[in-house]
Length: 200
Image (cartoon, rainbow, N blue to C red):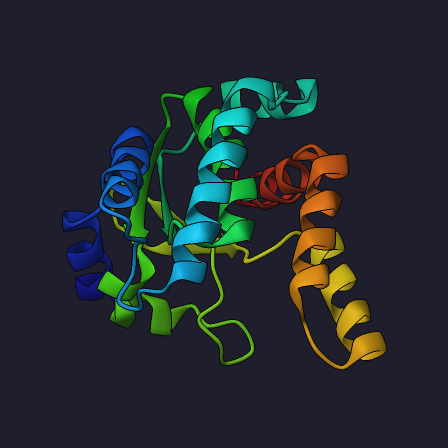
């Protein structure tokens, strides 16, 4: 596992470089990832708008701020993502804002399709669901915990929708974005801080 993590870290990006990578591809009419389609490029364009908005509007709770300021251990937060992923667009800006609050956290991001071995270590119910935040000990690269692909409430929403309608369609995706809009990043903050509290 360690060699896979080392390999992924060697081709990881900062948040700024990750965002720039997506922008360059969009200017070429492409999305990130192996599969290319009009739909994925369209989702990527929507996500660009969402992330730009969230970068400006995300508010960090005082409890989150206090925890980030008093971290004792040093971590690498390694996130598996893609530009077309709606959940990633909602969660990554929150994780970035949190990481910025502490010099104990080094945030690195990798693209899922370029890091299949890593993704296969962190499947969700057998699927390559993203985003996935992997919290590593900065020195040993030991995996200390992970979060994702969604907060519990968003997972519950999707699960309930699937039970009621038998599938996840465009309406479900749109309604999930509304769930995130109303949540304002609070659930992501709460679940990541809870995980950090257990590690500290």
